[in-house]
Length: 284
Image (cartoon, rainbow, N blue to C red):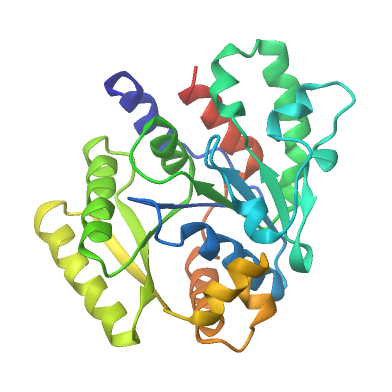
């Protein structure tokens, strides 16, 4: 990990030029906080606001975005290395036109790719720059791939809950990003909050610890309220913003999407090609 830290820092600071796609990495310190559910419904809400959105399920070997969306991809990202396979054949369309790109276990193969294979991959991946947003849904916890995807994004969003264990693990994740000097800013979403006050109080407590010990800038994107409709939607394999658009959780996601759009609208974008150039550099 220490050997990777230099690459992570260098790539986090690179400006690879302005392209269309905004790259957001959404992660969490531990599993079970509802991260993937937030990713999917946030993507749908951004799509409703007139944006073109792609979800990249980068939870290596453990991704479940397809299950939550009720769709079943036949291919994963690195299948495009086959000559006859285009990026369009790998993408699967979900609700409201949101596209899903499954990473599968392919990221582990990156360091074995030849130069010709990398060039072919990057050439095909350029088509993804037609999307306004690429939301990277990482695995939970602190590991090489999660830190790599954090270093590759324009904006880091950490999902936590009011539970002490969730906050502790989210703090540890940000501590790692600070230690390796990957990011100096993150946004926070408090999921499963019993009230807006609990969400704000949870963030304030979290920010207080960050300010005191890490000196890292954290912004509050908002809370997603605990909602039985959300649980029903998961069981139905249908996003709650589609099945229950008037639910408390759906209204929360709508507010977060509006705030997010305002925050990243004026940032320079690295695009899909820039994203994977960084990934190749990190995993080489």
